[in-house]
Length: 138
Image 1 (cartoon, rainbow, N blue to C red):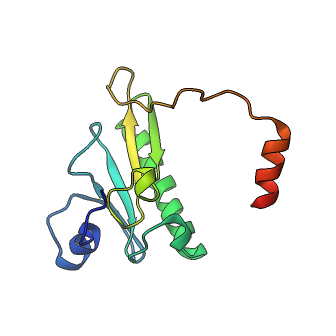
Image 2 (cartoon, rainbow, N blue to C red; image 1 turned 180 degrees about the vertical axis):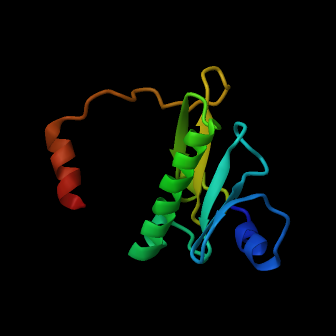
């Protein structure tokens, strides 16, 4: 269920206690207070935009520029073990629980207990006419 009112806007407007990793005039990044793994952080645009499609091109580029910079810094610092999940959860059906676009950076190590489970039938090929029809529709 999506959380209301927006906790990220509350953080940004009130100066709530947050452990910032990065900030500029368009984007902030801070440690997730309910981390999946140690070092899990969020990259958030300052402007309240709920979904991927709501971001304008400049904000999109600024968010992903910050993601790249922070990921590089994490790797150089040794904070990333064996890998990293870079996750965007978009919409309630996509497991977005805060209605403010954000990117999760989740450092990973083997056996850390986090997994992504795919539904039965995942990986079964779809026939070309179905793929072509869907592509044409888009």
